[in-house]
Image (cartoon, rainbow, N blue to C red):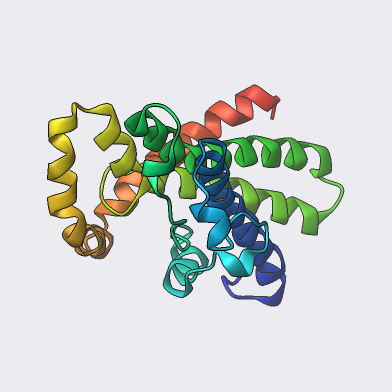
Length: 203
């Protein structure tokens, strides 16, 4: 099937919108539960995809099957309790949501397999997009979630390191993409997680 055939877009676009919308909503919801009003003030506590779309990141998802959305603004100074632990949970929320969606997509795939080709293709896209988005965002480079997770797992003195390389994170990611190293990191990890999920749901 051509990448941009009508049938392919009918299944791919909804899968992308679901994956990025729930990913960003999860970040905002966890921050809100910790006491931060910032996501709500910026209109990000919504499941409306238009509030979360980043043009370049969405294009990357269409072409390369991994990309990003607009980051949800978060202010840890509003958090109740330990701010570093709060930021850790906010960072984890998006990738964890994608893994949950991937698991549910596998169940959907199992149910419709051999019954509806359109739904089968949709659940396949939903499964792969969510796994790729989870793995991509766990790479510990700014501005990805992995950098926030690692920065708040390590002792506090290492936080300044991530702040120093934050401006170079997108450039490093582009170099990794251009050299093919990004795919070498993401693809085997996605395949491994896919195999685990298939075993878990009995496919």
